Length: 144
Image (cartoon, rainbow, N blue to C red; front, side, top):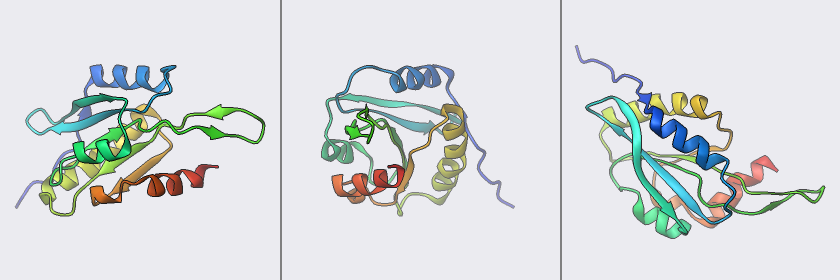
């Protein structure tokens, strides 16, 4: 009988980095991309990107491996009371043609990561081509 994949822990250094990123003052488009270290069963930093467009981010994501991009892009959202916010988003990129064990491990670990960071704007894409400005604006409109 095969074993089911375990839910991975989140690297403590990554948690600290993500929390600092979440409260940063910069308003440029930036992202932190996370992956799972399969040997350590740990969510770790894959890449940090600054001044990145959504198209550039899409090109950075592997086509056959899941990833967790967080942060990008910092769109301005104007509230009715005059406030401006810069929503941060978390995406679970899970390509259809990646190994089922990886998909299950990433899907199972996603909830732990979301809870650890207290995230609210969480979305999933199965094909990186879905990541367009129109798609993102549509998803963010659910929170306005």
